[in-house]
Length: 237
Image 1 (cartoon, rainbow, N blue to C red):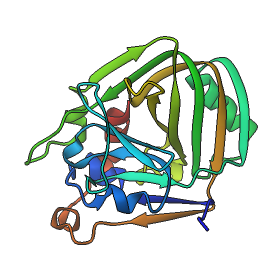
Image 2 (tube, rainbow, N blue to C red; image 1 turned 90 degrees about the horizontal axis):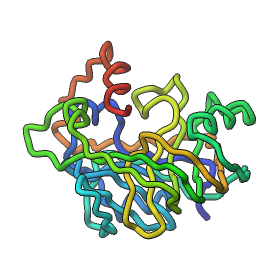
Image 3 (cartoon, helix red, strand yellow; image 1 turned 135 degrees about the vertical axis):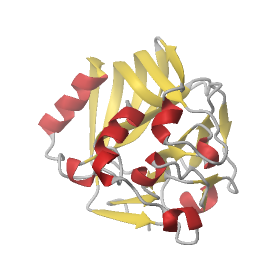
Image 4 (cartoon, rainbow, N blue to C red; image 1 turned 90 degrees about the vertical axis):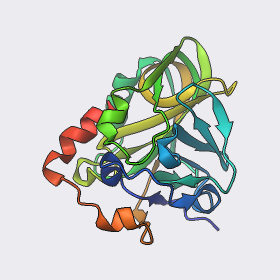
């Protein structure tokens, strides 16, 4: 029986910020630890979203590909989807929705998963291009990201809330990815407006952090903690 109160994460956002993009865990192994989640692909080749036990890549060209089990990822977070809360929302901007969720539920100091299935009157996303060694810093890569937009589109948001206390493990606040029902649009969310949909929340009592201990770049990385907060804000927004 799967643990539904646990979040599983491979790698950290802090090391991704520093340019550690080499894939170090297979999709097949990742999906043993959760059926929903988000992340990226080896060489930072686009954005990743997992739903119903399947993982999908949204490339910088906007193409959606289902990932095979042998594809490697440098950073990803997953959980087994069994929400504690499901609530219907209509006609609300994403930023307002997120504020309302934190007012309604006492989760500000918890990691929690969020899944939104519905129709979006506005959806704006981004995806980054595949990188080559020597890898640049993530803030350099996201400065040249591809952006996509759509109106009145059906699809699913998957993501997580990270408490401020754990900035660096993930990005403090909401980190959300999107995939359309038609599998023709998605990526890391920049902005959205929910027309009508079901919002599901799943708080976690524990975090399992998995590290790529056989990866030389990870073992030798030296994260600039003093600059980390500002660089995460630049890269994520």
